[in-house]
Image (cartoon, rainbow, N blue to C red; front, side, top):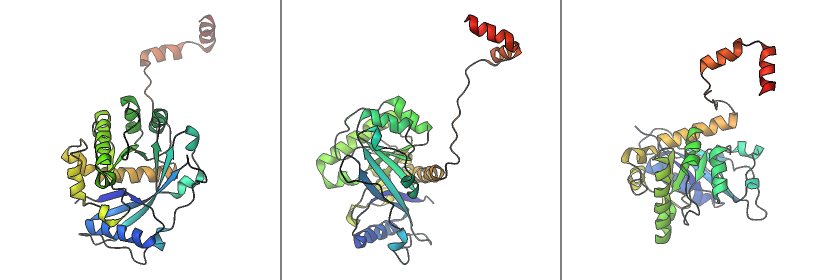
Length: 268
């Protein structure tokens, strides 16, 4: 049986409402949720602090519908950035189970795909994506194990946002071919949550196949969680580069005496 996850539950200081959203998620069959703390560094007096302890929310965590275990609650940080200086690896990031970037420019999107130490890249839902998704950038993110997020709640709230969400998602799918995509709610209240199978079907509107839609709320989310754990411990992430130089050519170079190699290099 698939394990479903919603890695974007909007944080609120209203603990009663936050508890209600998590309880609803458990009732709908989500085994894991992530409380999302959004920090917009474009605004003044915005700082990255430590997340609230999830144990403060419940004495006993609600049991997942159809399971015999309680729901797992993670902490997630989303950094809204319009300049590269807005995204610096800080010690505070390690306090979060997941770290996401919401790049506002094409340059930052490329940097997020290729350089930033993150787990998730957010795709605009409330507005038209201000740039095109370049295949090279997207493929770089996929190779690094970074995932792209499409949130569906804005599409529920407003018809204009719905058009933006669907259009942006379709543009993303053209570039990534359905790979490394997660679908989350971004819910701020219980009524904005939808069941896992409804979301898997919603994925068809976003350009995902039935299988890809199911993976976007299950196995892909699990991969994001594992990526976050490796990022926090700085273990398990290894990059290798293929040496294009033919073996015979390398052997010939190695057989040449060091003194002769030096003369050849000087002549070149």
